[in-house]
Image 1: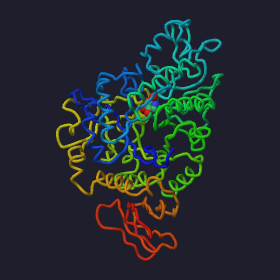
Image 2: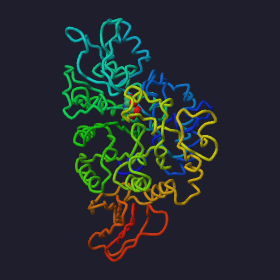
Image 3: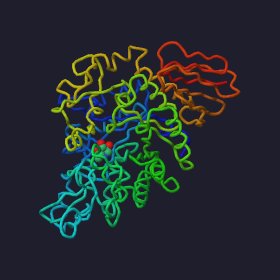
Image 4: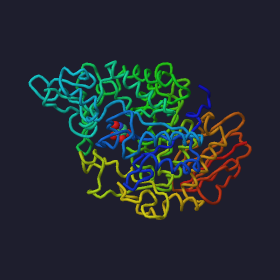
Amino acid sequence: MPENTWWKRGIVYQIYPRSFQDSNGDGIGDLEGIRRRLDHLAWLGVDAVWLSPFYPSPMADFGYDVADYCGVDPIFGSLGDFDRLVGEVHGRGLKLIVDFVPNHTSDQHEWFKESRSSRGSPKRDWYIWRDPAPGGGLPNNWNSNFGGPGWTFDAATGQYYYHAFLKEQPDLNWRNPQVRAAMHDVLRFWLRRGVDGFRVDVIWHLMKDEGFRDNPVNPAYQADQPDINRTLQIHSTDQPEVHGIIAGMRRVLEEFDDRVLIGEIYLPLDRLVTYYGENLTGAHLPFNFQLIHMAWRAQDIAALVEEYEGAIPPGGWPNWVLGNHDQARIAVRVGAAQARVAAMLLLTLRGTPTMYYGDELGISRVEIPPDAVQDPWERNEPGLGLGRDPQRTPMQWDGSPNAGFTTGRPWLPLTPDHGTRNVAMMQEDPSSILNLYRRLIQLRRRHLALSVGDYVGAHADGQVFAYERRFGTERLLVALNFGHAAQAVPLPEGVAGARVLLSTHASGEPAIHGQELALRPDEGVVLALS
Ligand code: NOJ
């Protein structure tokens, strides 16, 4: 794989289709809406778009409950709309990545309807059916990630089926070769339609312990935590056999040119990096969510970057993610000033960055009134702050009603400041975070050191994390102030000169006195060293 192939060099932009652009006034975004907004992505300068699911679905989990893997839900449009979208995405030199949800289907999928119809059904073994425990009750102690037990009893056939998520999302049995073959054909269906890759939902869940042993109880569980934290998921997820399944998907992708396999994996670093697979036969990019969970402190982030860089197997390519549709937005987690520093971090670390729609506007906290809650997790386990609606609110385009997202009633509220926090207004303001994102992306494109260059840790103490990116003779220094006070940063030894290429501050420049850089509060800079 060449060092500068698109998914190594490029920037991935995640779109949550319900929330990007509505084209028919039903208050929900759709594929045609996305097509009409491709100018924004081109203006911003990203390279690839990842679409969360748009497949036919009862929407119990907003599309992560798929009822037909080879179609488009009428809410989002048609296959014709999809084909038009792929064509235009490619016409602009961009790539299109789609979501693949192989761990579970909807309970309305024909496969599950057939499977649950009788114990003797030819598709019975396509899902995970177990007898009640001796004496009755749940087959084991596995919990659902969305609260309550992971097993639901089917009275008609007298067995339980397993669902790692909602009861409307029964888990497929990937030990069954027919399931594997059918799902490989789904991949081929979309690959032939031109998609450039897949983001694979909960890929570390695909295989479960063959003996269905109980998970150990979590000694650290506390009552204010979600149900899923009651036990440690060591038998229900991350089984050694999963790597063979992923290698199988990878082989399907390799029937086609230059496609990418991205895996969604929430595991500690040492486990995460096993998903590159033996001899790199696994995911090209096992999603690295470590920045989402790490305390926002210079030394912790520096230590994380070093540890991650050191853990990646030879030839494996790193990647970084700041947010997605399941996690509180970055501006909520770190505040408006540090969200700018976070943007610089994301776009200057070594590895493919994935950015989340709306983060380029600095969208922050959106209050969801109780009667507007949509997320099933929030409904199942209310009051714990688990709801994911706040990070799924509509994109804000301009000063018109509903910020140009819809002519109808948006399915979730916009931010209260959408009259000014929108693409049209912020494009005109050189100091906006939107223009900062664009400048960072342009800088990354201009300097190969920032995309494919080496990473060299330089300095981490107190509030500052600084690192170099090097390519050929070029040396760039990125210095990030994670604090709200000014900081002095020593330049690397032997450096004769330093020139500011970009600051996260809209005006002025940080002072450089001899061998010392004076960072202003909450400032990040990229310097060219000589
Ligand atoms: C991870 C997805 O990102 C999330 O939105 C979904 O609820 C679960 N997987 C279940 O598919």
